[in-house]
Amino acid sequence: MFQWFRPNLHVGSVIDLTPERLQKYELRSLLLDVDCTLKNYRSQTISPEVSRWIETMKEKGIGLCLVSNGRGERIRRFAENVQIPFVAPAMKPLPFGCQTAIRTMKFDKKSTAMVGDQVFADVLAGKLAGLFTILVVPIQPEEEPWFAKMKRPFERIVLQPGL
Ligand SMILES: [Mg+2]
Image 1 (cartoon, rainbow, N blue to C red):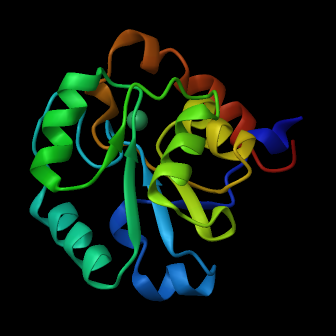
Image 2 (cartoon, rainbow, N blue to C red; image 1 turned 60 degrees about the horizontal axis):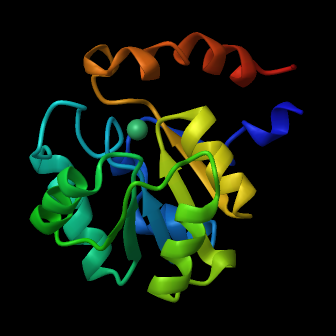
């Protein structure tokens, strides 16, 4: 049953997702989690590195859509800052947010990945929606709210190789 929680790819940061690497996996669009994936939980802004990465993705024609469990208004402001369409609140691990994003953005499911930092939200939602899944190491997880922190030890368990 752990295969529902195992990402297809595990990287340190979204920055590691270079156009070449995406091409290798035949990925042309990304659904992006926001908190701890693009920025730390408390911040409204992103690092210059992530900002540059977003610009590169756009220049290379990679489709982007934010899919966040965050409150609509907070995510709307963030989406406006980074100029990326969004679906929020997405209610991950339910797959409906991912499905809505794919439908409205006219992405091809076969070449779309869900990218996020949480196994029990992002990876599971992506898998349930039938997508390629990419797990990133969370940005500053110590600033997360308690309900997100609580899940981290369980993530380590299901990610253990050999289980
Ligand atoms: Mg997150």
